[in-house]
Amino acid sequence: MENEVFKALSDPTRREILRLLRGGDMNAGEISGHFDMSKPSISHHLSLLKHARLVLDVRKGQNIVYSLNMTVFQEAIGWMLAVAGKEKKKR
Amino acid sequence: MENEVFKALSDPTRREILRLLRGGDMNAGEISGHFDMSKPSISHHLSLLKHARLVLDVRKGQNIVYSLNMTVFQEAIGWMLAVAGKEKKKR
DNA sequence: CTTATAGTTAGATCGTTGCCTAAATATACA
DNA sequence: TGTATATTTAGGCAACGATCTAACTATAAG
Image (cartoon, rainbow over all chains, first blue to last red; front, side, top):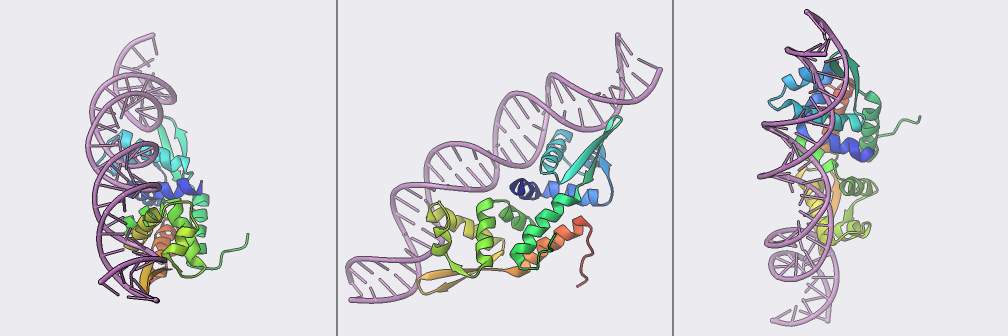
């Protein structure tokens, strides 16, 4: 799971998708409109982000709306802070 | 450069090496002793970490001692915090 | 200068990843 | 039901990445 997250973050397109979603939820078409790449390719990237649980998806009529899943993000940040030597917050 | 950092972080062996170095500097032999993998393979991983500037290396006699490079780590953490929506520290 | 030790570089193999086009699925609406 | 739109799934291919063994380089020490 941790591994899936870091694998997902290792591609520039996927990181850009995450950055886009930072500005608000978007459907798959809107997301792919930001890239010079086929829709299936973007769909594939979205699928990886989804399996890593970095994004959530909800169908809204004909569209599928994607949003950031902060929880998993925090975990990855937690791992990095642990290595960087920062105090990790007790839960 | 950012891309190299995330690519470097995408492999479990490399993340484990970083975690090990968190406990103190180590030479290449000591590092490879922690893994069930050939020395050349570990050397390759160290090379990637070095090119991503996540680690620094200094020769000490017959040994080459590796250490964490916090600076680049902070940058990667900064990127993640930016997406996660945390306040980014003004420089 | 020769040998031993530490580490890297070279080259091969094999699984993985990223991209594409074509086809399939799902929803909306006439 | 039939057509249009949105998105995913399937299949294929080239590039990349992780690993190994063998060979090389660098330092140390007799």
